[in-house]
Length: 143
Image 1 (cartoon, rainbow, N blue to C red):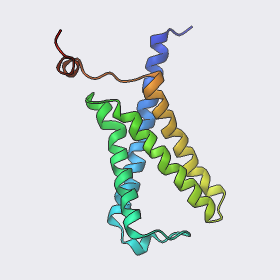
Image 2: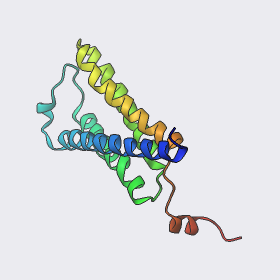
Image 3: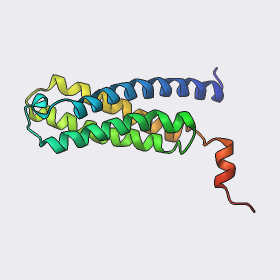
């Protein structure tokens, strides 16, 4: 029977894998929304150009937030917040896809949203990452 540490290590490895994959996906999607011409991003539901750029910035920052704080162990509590923000974006993507009349393609943002929710929950409850010992010493007041 696996011990708690073995289970926690497996969960941490799985979380890191999901975080890296989601970060790559959102970084690609976000940067594409920032560099593509607005006309090329025509969808079944038309959004203003500023809104598409805003979503691109949010996705790019979310991708960075999924990995960087946890990797550097500087404010790792930002990682589940980034994941939660990406869940909100994916909820919107599911709704917009369904409004366009396509049910099957809505499964993609739905699954991505579930994975982001898993990261948010996992980094909060299952395998949270602690700040580095050096950072903790700086942040804690002297008694």
